[in-house]
Length: 276
Image (cartoon, rainbow, N blue to C red; front, side, top):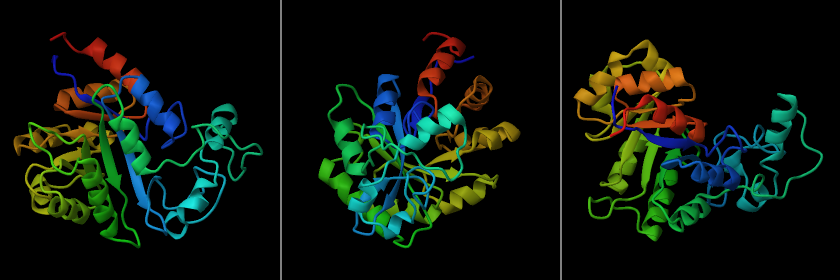
């Protein structure tokens, strides 16, 4: 057993309780004591960074279409939350859409700028793990837009004296390298979903970049985390929702747990760890 608690990162907010990527989900995660918030970002047709996971809006809104072909005003006109209530009450409702549009924070589209503003105004430190989604028609423009927004908030430089609350993540090694060039001191994370030699990973991303495997992959290959840490890299793990998965991560020496259930994960960690 260990006394070191991994950082608890709310995956798309407290997405087990609230519609993913909505302000309500992130406020719930903050209230639950999450150390950090994870978000996926995509670029709209008119150049805005929005918090949406899928390439299309079909699954998480009452609309249809590809995010990158729609303008911000079009996306803001959609209901991003009522699907969650229907899913919780009736299970998967397939192609059905809600009859009544929810106008609360559970249904508004969230821009990355708004999420940054919310975190900047908090009375306690909360970090943000920003995942840039690829492939995309806009290529490197996503990272360039992110770098500009970080500059606006003064979060593009990371030093021990003034750490940035933001880290960038991606399944694209090219995107990680691109972000390293744009903001050389910003913390970075390379997401991996299949087993690959650690030496191959070293060749794809710069030194110091954290590595984040899927928890199921880590469970099947427990020494993978040991090899990652032996290279001087932090081990982040996604998506960790059960006590069994949390134990796998603790045994592997993970620094970060990305979870849909931040409140439950914090409680489970507290019960598993020896007080410092």
